[in-house]
Length: 589
Image (tube, rainbow, N blue to C red; front, side, top):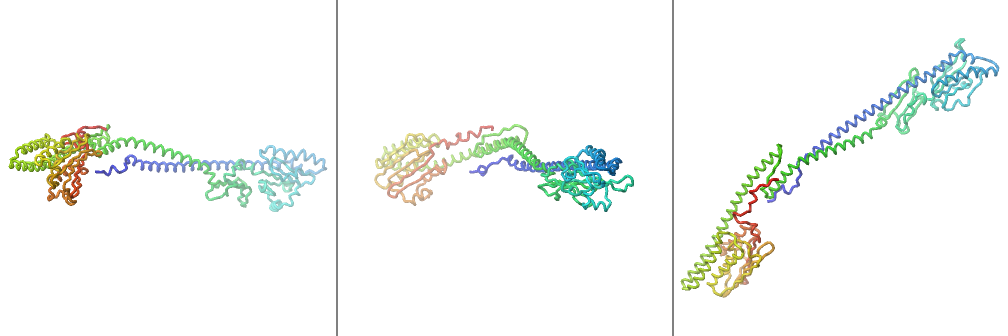
């Protein structure tokens, strides 16, 4: 019987457990990776933000310091008596030349040398006797510290100057002329006479570039999307602005930081895009992803190793179960340790021993039952032939044919000597043919030369063991039903056909109609062929359904009976033999 387990693909339970295990490892790695990535990005963002805040604070302090230094320069010039006297002095061109060279230029040059960054200092005088210096270069970009002397008349056409004069504005930070374009910031202050503190004797304008005022903050890379601006909080005017070439500052996700420069109303604003804050996010994501993949691979390898090691014992149990399905009941399982596998192995061995004993008992009972059935069938054959022979002997005795009676008694004696076969069920084919010949000898006494019998046997099948009394019923049936003329011929053959033994009994008698053949094969009681059906039953009982008797007959042309038997009798051992000899032994796996 085919077992369902043998046709299904076997997948160890330890490998099935790998699926939820790997899923758990994957989910755990994903969660840990996501949390780690989020925390690292947050930490990196916080560090970057802290660094930028520190830079802005440093820039604010730097700007306040530099702007305070510029105020001190203006205060120094404002409070210098010698500088004031020089600005108010009148005289000829020579004396004024020396005044400018000796008293004005030195006081303009000294603060430039002390200030650390490039600035442009311009003196606007109301004294017509003081000549101008450097007028042609006053609009150039500030690349180095310079001073200029110009007449106040150059400012009269400027709207911003007229506005300061009308409002009385003084000591202010502002952007005038082309300061916005050049990125400069101007400190403008009036110079008044110490005589009455009202008379204006000139103006001081100190211009500084925002690059030097803001310091390193202006060097932050524009290609990263950062934006920098200086805004006048009082008017909202943008004094200085540097935006990114690749990003429009001020997005909803951008970070905006600001610091106010003290006592100026100016605010330094920095807009930092999220992409800059998260500039390491991609690298961190790739690194964490690689770590998670490596962790998953390592944990998967560990899980597979554990599953493989723990699955070895289960595999041994499964292999033993499969061997039991194949009929190897002699195998036993031996495991060491104190776990559940050892308990299963012990219980399995106990069950196997009980099953082995039960199979042995059932087999012995089956063999005994089969033997009893064969002996019963055999017993049905022997009386049937005996009755017919004794009836013939009685008839010959009544006729006074003593010699014939003696011959038949001797033939009958030899026939039953071969039939008994010391109680054994199987006999060599050669003996079976001798038994048939003994029966023919009996019939020879009765019918003399009225029939001819031919026996052919291949030498290689001579010792093949078969059930006794297989051929005699068919030979007897020839004499009882097939003979319709004066003579009849019988041919008996034995030959090998592959791994089978083929026996044939052929006669040239009257033959049978198809329905008569069917009745014989069905064992119909009216067919008068009880012995033939008996042979069929004995063959199938002994060897199985694939062996048996087939009959081919032509009415008026004769009959051929074909018996098909296994060539190897050891495949079907006799009761008491060694068919289950291996069941009693034990094999440990």
